Amino acid sequence: MTDRTLVALDVNGQRYEVAAPPHHTLLEVLREECGLTGTKHGCELGECGACTVLIDGAPVYSCLTLALESQGHEITTVEGLATGNELHPLQTAFAEEGAAQCGYCTPGILLAAKALLDRNPRPDRAQMAEAISGNLCRCTGYTAIYEAIDRAAAAARSK
Ligand code: FES
Ligand code: FES
Image (cartoon, rainbow, N blue to C red; front, side, top):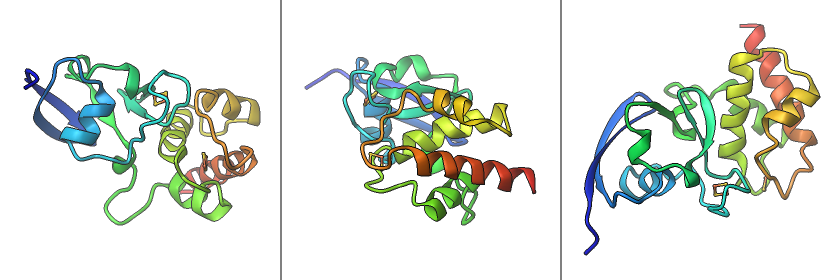
């Protein structure tokens, strides 16, 4: 049996104390120990962005981050975007613009876009492209994603 160690993670405002092999990535521990399967397994090589989460508000590839080194930081996954029953403006906009097709890239792109809008409420297309440049989407051609980020930014500004 693999040795396990205690890992304490602060995810979406909640403390998770789990036992996990010390070499396991944040992606593995989120999905397998915390039950948060919204974060997706993709390449596990730092190339696709499907595993993107926010650590202290900045997007990171959870497949390249050890769970142990994520302790003491605020982690946000796609499960933490909605407030109660109220979707985040990005989630609403992605639905309205058809920016999620197969949806596999969507959790990671939502989080990369959230990090962008949190620091820049009025991004232009070049800034959006840069913000999601680490997130591959095979389905949409990206146009609907940019439209959705635009729509969410406008919605957030009008609140
Ligand atoms: S699964 Fe992490 S970058 Fe692809
Ligand atoms: S919606 Fe299918 S990979 Fe992006």
